[in-house]
Length: 135
Ligand SMILES: [Zn+2]
Image (cartoon, rainbow, N blue to C red; front, side):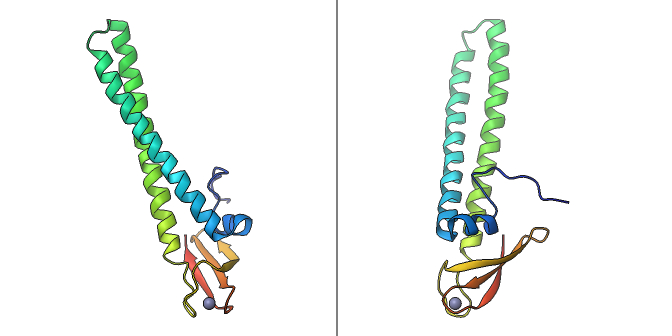
């Protein structure tokens, strides 16, 4: 079985580190999470606008408003959830990015990845110490 496909903007840790390096991967995860936060805020503005437009609308417009309200609410909840996931995941990985032997931060190369357990084996570029990051 293969892992579910991820969007190209948020590659898995192993793939992201191989492609961009850890710092760039981390930066992209944070940027992506904050883009989702922005979408959450825009959805909230849409919800407020729809509530305001609801009052003087005809029945057909009110029905349309209800549908748009549900859609905006769903998008807002999804983007809030995605924002929180991306942010906490990036922080969780960043907290494990210090080499346990020499303490060097974020200077490691990926040795292997176990997608089922979510563990990524990494090796310090400074002292060659190996450890695992739960991602
Ligand atoms: Zn080290």
